[in-house]
Length: 326
Length: 270
Image 1 (cartoon, each protein chain N blue to C red):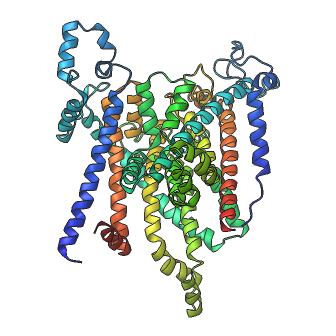
Image 2: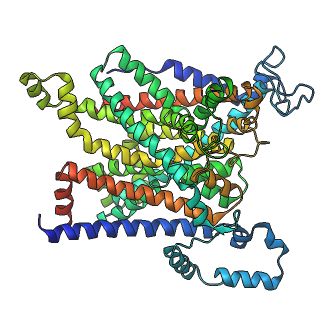
Image 3: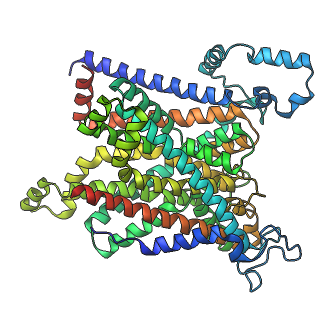
């Protein structure tokens, strides 16, 4: 592959990314504007009723609400590009600034859960496939299906009830002790709740993929060569299903983030989810838009990364894609 | 791997559904009546499941709450299925460019977690009602089914019976209803059942978080949201009993969905 086509390829990927982000922002913007409620109320809340006519007109002018919706979007997008997503109505500060203070908590919570689910899911998948059809596999599958249908918030509640209220082992809520510290202690229950309610989603898909893989013909050759089951699965099958596993994890990301947001709410864990729910309750649309955009953008970027990893793992992905273009 | 009909799940679900339909008959008590002298009582003979923080009998409330939860779930599923079928058929029958555009759009929508979309739209809609919350959940959960419908339609768009119907001047909805839907409904049925489960779970989550139904409209979720603080006082039944009803319903629905999925796959193999 020459440099020219690689450059073209990167440009194309970048173009796709930008286009997707623009469409996402369009959706978010228009949904918030077709609101039956008055956008003024979204900005100023109940204060709207106390404003004079002159003040209302000024505010309308300042917010650009007198212009048509396309111009409004252009203006909004222009300032968004400069990092200005408007003022958060609850916090009376730039929305981006408020998000900037808590996003690392969500990143930590979701990141740790993601890695744990990836590792545990893979291990569970391998274990199930090695015991496929046996009682233990069937039991795990049953338990998995059951945990997968328990809503996250209930899983979290039960965990709080058992480990925090009854046994008093772990803290009930928050991300840190009063005055800082104890981050890990505060992370255990939320992470456990996320992992418990989402692990099977990934493990099941991986299990099915691996189960198909061990039925392929090259496995027979491996056996004839005298490789052990462990070697076959970890050295040969893993390599082949890795692209699929990466795709699974990419598809899973929005589920994980949605789950993390709910869990944050239940544990009063300061993060994007708690911020999002609070801003929905108090009609802080600027904040909600920003959080939706951040979440959507991170999922889209993660999908792109997954695609790139897959192309590294399996060059066939790339050549196919490029052939498609030409 | 042959799977037997999930008799247990079906019967449990049937009991819950029938119980909810005939809620008034089963409980025999007014769910909204507040026994002000018996607040937050543990399960006892008088109140089988105890009473909540407002003194309402939980056994009576639970069946009435189930009615709302199931209604929201059914309406959301109906709506999302309708959108998914029409959208998927359009994408499947359209030319490659339109198809690509439509599918990109679903991918973008799928990149935002459903809970966030629901919260977003519901916040704009205003105060949640049974109808609005079902509609919002339906509007945000059709994407996966639509993708499946599209790929099914793509496989049969050039089949003789579709071409024949088209050449005889059959309209889009005529072809969709008479020729396409009978062929793919069995394949997407399991996803519809799964959607029903997640719609019920979504309503419960939202109501629990205080973003869904207000607490005076009883559903399993709003019932539990009342008792967030009760947990600390040790009134576990306020949470666990509605929660168990919810979880059991969801597990039964999932089991039935799983059965449909494997049953469908078996048909295809033959």
